[in-house]
Image (tube, rainbow, N blue to C red; front, side):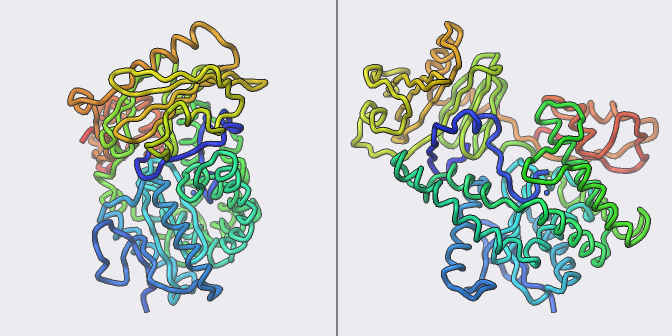
Length: 501
């Protein structure tokens, strides 16, 4: 859960959002050119830097477009946990992007490449030459050519004017702002759920994705990278999506806004064959792994950490627990937990004047189906709280709001059937919310990508034993290294593992 902005939710859409809270962006799987790469707290000294645009006009030449693009750029950085600072990775991304832009005939254009501090596997592009790649995607890729495949795909979207066409469609997202502003009484300008909804509405269509795939492969091939890398990375994205969703291998789409993954892989392979058989072009595996060695993996502690059934936020200084049958998930927008098909929890925050009582806030109209007579204020663990009940035709809600260090937080519990088990779970979670202490902080572990070299006689299971004790580490090792269980290790080659820093 990000500390950057409070968030609001249109509860008509509560349960669909609780499932994943995923952004349908571009790919989920995803002289020298003027490239900017933003590094927090540092002013770029050259024309190669990561995320801050220096131009004052857009490709349309309209100042209003420029203001809107810059504003959206800032919103995305906030929504995705900020800019990730890793100088080795930043320099590598900038160098690859430079080569791709030259190959694409865009050496005189301005592009802004931003590494986002998010574990999501994602990359996307916006008008004005803004290109984003998450550290999660950097962790999944295995060589320079695979990263080049992602960046060239995004560059293709920009030069094919897909980003501009998409921005026109986002005008329809004004309805999202009206919902936030008028129905919920919130502020869409500072609302992360609204920001992600706008981006979701702005997703590229399937025809644009396929054309960007094709053009991206051609750009990467012309830049000297292995054109077959796009197919490898798409397959890794498919496997990773299945892994985190708990599904077995299957050929279905993992993002509904994109062409099916097998279909995309077949098409990018057809484009790659125009350059030749596999094995041509640079891969740059050794250099790539060296650049991401030490890369943060998984949730950022600054955005809160899930430790078993506990959530701890070391920046906002609170913690709470959920029952064993609840599965916690952390997103930029909220903390969610699902218990089977019939129960769910969402924890988020909202901007509310300190002068407004918690009870009055519950009655202020943002809860659909509120039963006003159930509003009750109380105190738990020296924290002021209020609770209420709400009901719709399909769901029963328990809503709790609390003030902690002058910030307002909300728990929303939903169930299809009102059972004693549900009531006990709600009570347990609310009673567990408290100020975090040193013992809680001591449980936080920072996971990073590390490299191990295969020795003679090593098997896959030998390297897996060196992984941190994280969930499903056996399959994670295979996916991170684009391996299958029966694949042999290459003696002397380095492989990625996840280690506790």
